[in-house]
Length: 232
Image (cartoon, rainbow, N blue to C red; front, side):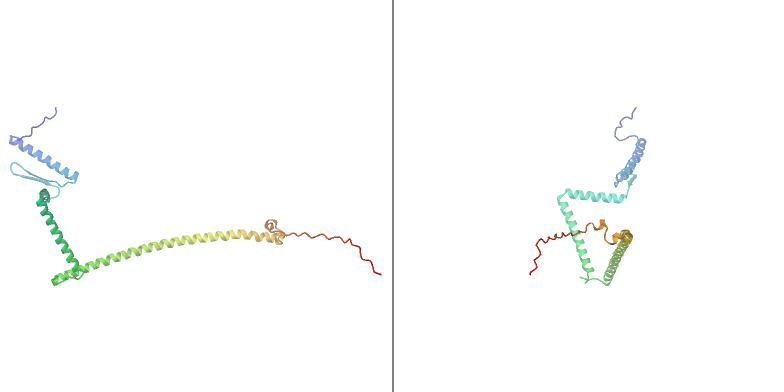
């Protein structure tokens, strides 16, 4: 048979109550650990026994959990109360104005302005801060220049390789043109030396396009007139 439903009420027997407390406390702490691990939650658990003994669990720190709880509870209460909410934002605005004033004053001092009222120790600290800032700026500048030089060197090597490849291709094309030139014009020279007709321009294939000018001569007319008689 299944386990029956337990009535939730105070256990009268002290021994049974202590046993149940020990079992339930361990199960509750185990569940709190699992919740913190599985859900990435900040968990804080505080248990006081009937005898006043303290049992606690916190996945981060019990002090930080309590401080966060108090702060969140105070902010929540302030948001619920309009008057408290106005005072809260007024305090936040005052804090931000003070921080802004301090930053502006520090910025002016770094520029060499409004140095009155500073002691020698303050001026020495300001000088050290400027030197550290200048050193960091120079290091960053050198790093950027070094990176740019390396990038330009890499591009130069790449262009050099491309030029070498193009030069090889040009030489290959030039060699092919020379071979083709030898094949074409070398064959023509052999034909001109071997065939006498080609020397005198009787090559029908090459000279077939040369026009030939023909001119018809007029026929001579016969002289039918009688010769003149001799004069006496």
